[in-house]
Image 1 (cartoon, one colour):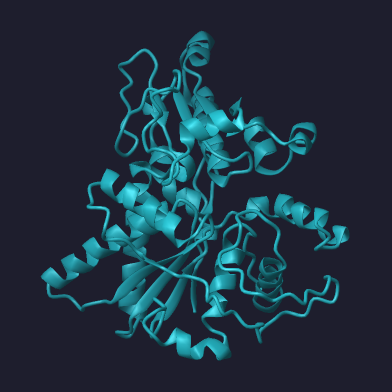
Image 2 (spheres, rainbow, N blue to C red):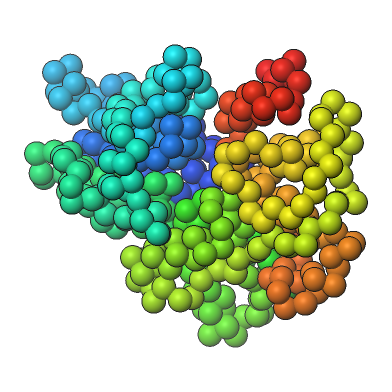
Length: 386
């Protein structure tokens, strides 16, 4: 198994890393004078995308203050803002801010809290929120499209970034990622087929990577270069396969596709036996109910996810977060169990007969707050949380 360590990516000035460094590369590199006055987005209060956007906006303000020779009044007038919509905060988070929420607030994020019904009215739907700002949403959400192309001739330029960066803003980073994968596999693949596996929330990265890989591979064939068989496989971590398919289909149409040519989706093995690769967990409560679970409920502490997290950390020395990385690997490892070898080699599994490259998407900044939730459920020793 190859691990593509996107978690080690770190963008200059904003210092954002991992998958969000890919998604928001074009925003990070946008010159300060071309950056919008207001960036607007929405989502959960511990979102990695939320923190990344807050860091980018903050970096534009800080670096302009350092580099600009304009007057102080001009700098204040041009100060960029990040406005973020979320559901009403839970009481514990309001009383004791922590994790990504605390960091984003310290970077200047302006939080707009909405009642659950109002939030769902604005941002709900079968395919998640819209790639354009809801009509009912009051200014400053004047949208501009494309890859961070901003009209700064207007009195107040605004950029709408859908939840998780599910828009064309993420295209540039995906193209670079596709090029890196193709170049690596051309040198090291020995002609074998490859499955590029990655966890999915909005599945934006998976969809854009799939599109860019197909374009590069088609161009190689036209130029009579060595053919490569590379397939993108997304492992849904928010919702299930039907939700992931709707999300990707919707975004594919927005970026010029027909909504039908999508990445493969790795599904849980429903008849999941007890794993023979199970990590020893002397300090964890014993769990005798090993009934099939299907996809995990996003953000919900689960002992299977925790066991995978511990196994990968202690046996292989790699940290994965508990919202995307560990749940994705829990499903991926089901396809490697000895008792499911027959399933692995039939047509139901998109990784059958392929080498595996897993894209480590980062998100490690939130591990502490995630483990705190496991502590409240009695699944981890409080002393083990730093």
